[in-house]
Length: 443
Image 1 (cartoon, helix red, strand yellow):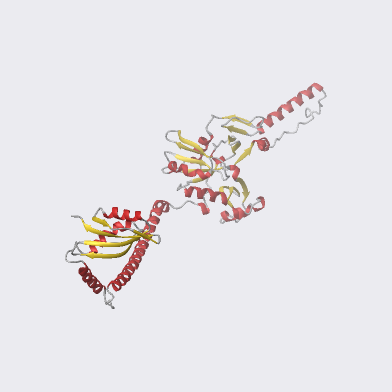
Image 2 (spheres, rainbow, N blue to C red):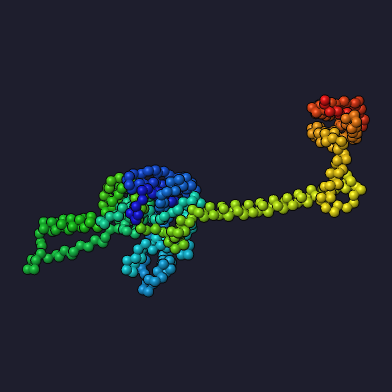
């Protein structure tokens, strides 16, 4: 295993809509499965975020969605091999090589073993992981996570297909319908030495029919033995398929995802190179703070913007209040034509209020009006026609109109909380009720 980890999360991906995504958390230290399950599809990847927070995450690419193959390397291409590889495969591929990610897995002299997959699929998976805040450590062809045998292949069935690992960097995903043909094609050529039709150097010929039959049986035995040796050995971890050629050697049964998870941690192969290469370590350490920094910048900009808007709004309100105060000042005190300053306006208004306020603060007309306002607000249908304040008698007379008699009754009830209310006779004319109300302070 490339590094010692207590637990890691392995996810077998799929780019097909609606295809299930299997996952498993394995603990090498405890040698057991910590958790496992299956998502409905890649869109539910966020459900695994809690498992990925403190664990390395390995992604398994279904071999059915990619291609593992070999290509001859032309002389002089070594220095720019990564750039040349896609175009060496151009004639063998049906797709535009610019749409494909070609990953060199191993070079053996002038033969390169490569993994080929569409950029679109890798982009889809990486975007899904990024949206969930999950960091993907490796992206590995799933067949290369099976155990490696020096005397044959390894195989396991998953989702109705057979994953087969042929070597360190070669493998396939075979459907049951063509598995037999594929295994048959893996046989080595059969070579049988020529049987001479002469018996010895003395020229004696084989004339006996019995001797000929015996020789024929020996030839058939040799051919059968050679054919048996030519069949590939396949070490399988799930029940062997029926009527499939090859030497199928059973291994201790294992959960396929457990088998793949263990192999994923040990595998050095990954498709994350070139444009998909993980960030440098220092960037990775800064990554958790990136969202915090962005959030702080957004908050700072928002606070500054809010402060600017608040200042502008207050200035507008101040201008509006100033204009309204000047309008009221000219309406109440029309004899003053000019308003040289706000302090001048304030002093003149205070003088006017003082003159209207009477001898005592509690006896001024303005105080009565301020106390009268809540009651009038409760009965908005009441319209004041005339006000008469008699300071000597300590009473305020209202002449008002309303839509109905009940409005005056509501007004009387509202005013009774603070004043002694004498309601005069009410008259109705032209759909309006009019009347007088006399208010006195309660003793």
